[in-house]
Length: 350
Image (cartoon, one colour):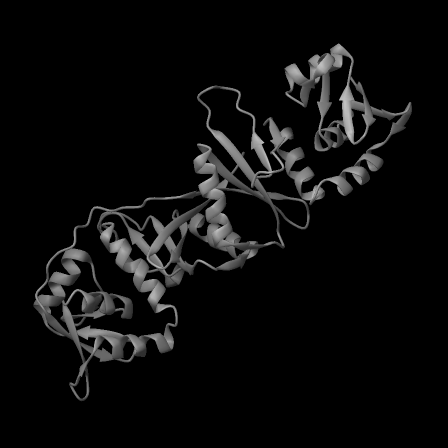
C-alpha cells in the first residue's frame, strides 16, 4: 500500500495519519514534527519511492524516482554510495538512519532493545584511499559513544562488503625469561647461535628462532631484540669481530628500512606475553601466538604501519580475506612514536 507525501523546500512530509503510523510506528522511517506530521530525509524518500511504498508530489505534480534521485544527488554528498548502503541494510531488516551532519559517521543503527549496543557506520567507495589515523579517530569516536564501528565499502558493481573495526588489547601467556649471555654469528641475513645449551633455552622457553643443526638461527628482528636485552653479542662469522648494536641495526636497515617500526612492535608484543614469529608467508610482518606454538595455531597476523599509512581498499580486502581463510585475525599495528594501536578488521554479514 502506497502512502502519499509532499515535497517542499527540500523536505518530504507525510500528513495522513495512516501513512504516518505505517512508516513511523511500524518501520521507524522519519521523525515526527508538529501537527503529527512525518518528515522523511531524502535517502528514506528515494528508498520508499523505489520500493513503491511512497507517492511523492510537489504542488500536485508527481515526482518520479529519477527526479528525486537527481535532487538527492545534489543535496547529499556521495549520495550513490550512501543510498546503496542504506537500501542494502534496510532490505536486510536493519533500521538505519543518516547520522548527524556534524558527526564523523555516515549512519547509525536504530536500537530496538535497551541492552543493544550503539552501532555506527562509515561509508566508503572501493576506490577510496584510507588513512590509518582517520580509522583510529573513527574508532575512538565510536568508543566515546559506547558503540561498535562498521565500515561499508561499495565496489564498482554496487556490491557491499562490511567490516567491523576495533582496537584490541591483545595479550598472551608467555613470560619473559632470563637467559645466559651467548654469541651469535652474522651469516648473510640471519644470526646463528652455535652454543647448543643457549639454543635449547631460547627455543624451548620463548620459541626464539628455528633449529640450525645443534644450534639456532634467529631472524634479524629477534637478534636486535636479544641484543637490547643483553642476551647475545654478535660477531662476524669470518673475522670473529664484534659488531655493535648501532652497526648491526644499520646493516639490517639496508634490507629492512622499516626495522625501527617492526622492532618497536616486536618489543611490545613480547611485553604482552605473545610469541612472535615472521608472518611473511601470510603477507604480514608477524604472526603471533597467545600460547606455545605446539599448543595452538597463531591467532593473529600483524602488519606494522606508521601513523601516516595509507592504503587502497583492495589491499585491505586481500589481507582480511587471507587471514579469514587461515582462521586468523588481521591487525594493523599503528605506531606513533612509542604509542601502538592494534586495529582489527573483521568480515561482517549484517
